[in-house]
Image 1 (cartoon, rainbow, N blue to C red):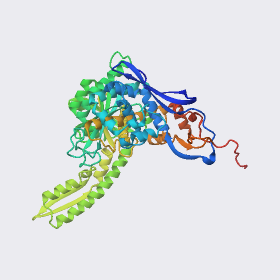
Image 2: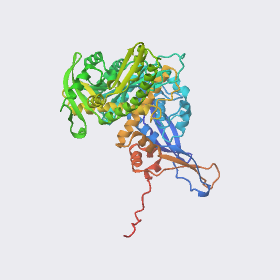
Image 3: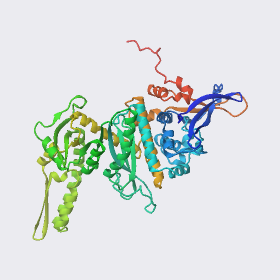
Length: 581
């Protein structure tokens, strides 16, 4: 296989020097390479400009699209996808790999419908393919999606994940798992298996949703594997379906690292995917587990009771010195597990705010029910049901005491807030999580640190939601094949963005980093050379900040625009002197 990266060189044509991008691909039918080339523009020095005849006519993207394209080249994404999907022979249009990379870049840089994909690519200086941007259309995407199977996309995921782990040294021994879903506006009568009505995260029960499960690495929190599943599916079934692909990924990693025996792997997940049978399945498959138990679980009740004892909660050391935790080893069903109760002040403050809001609404509802009961408008059963409904959220039933009595056919409601019970709830349950693991030899600090990585999967989902960095929607797909490929491209965009941040080594948020990269744009200036013919258009490089200059060097952005290598942001003149005292 030949490398799919772009090669930029110069060539003299008809006495003028041009910059050309070349790309090599592999013809699987003829078993030989074939090349694509695109002329980027003249490489001659810019003409002498007449400032009186100069005007700005637009801008072109360089920084964000260039960083993502460089990252896709490092992982050889196009080759991996085309090899898995069985792309054969040169075509007039893009391959599946080229289309997926183009859509992933669009989702990360300028989310829009695929009918705007060609316009987006035309507005970028870096190229994801040597084909003209006009060949990247929504119809081409749907045609390619219909040719790709779910098994082929799974194989491509494994190849890309293996390349990411090897190229950037990601730690894949501890993987965080979580699920979410996305709203669609697909009509009820439209056939399909992926978009189903289920437990929508957006609380829109009237919409069909598509589920997404993601496994992310502990280092860099990079998505390594994902599965698109029907919106009415369960977390346990999805994780069970991911085990085959996960086993293939780890087998490939073990082989690449030359290990004599498989490495020890651990899956971190929240309480929504708890199942004793799933725990047994993971143990048979050779995986350790770390999960946050639901507080209503009997084992969680035992752990919370243990943590409520005087001196049971102890502070951890090092970077977790502000965290208090209690630990015990006990039976969870038929399994022996280590339980760790972790106290979080941030979670406690959030739960207190939620209880305060819910209590205000519950008080108003209870006063209303009290008046209606006094007027004889509710019978006993209806009143008790309405009271349970009013107190079912935010632990209100634990400290709001209600009494329903009936005397001579009249129903009476009395209620009050028990302050002592509320303080006991805050002291023993609120702000606490119960972690359950079979990693008995891990320290308490290591268990807490590993579980915190699960939060970063939720951060990935926030980036994929509406208004995020790589939003999944709005999606205009309706066929299952298009939804799967669209989801694949979205997760690939999340992967590339995470790796760009990891490669730069910056502590900026992903949103701030993408804004910095998006600011690296070429300004198009139309001028005159004082000769006959069409007025030439020149690209002017922007002033760069230190982070942007680092990105230009790391992601080789100057190969698309050489002037970037000498561009810098003006600093305060060294000749400026401080005023005399």
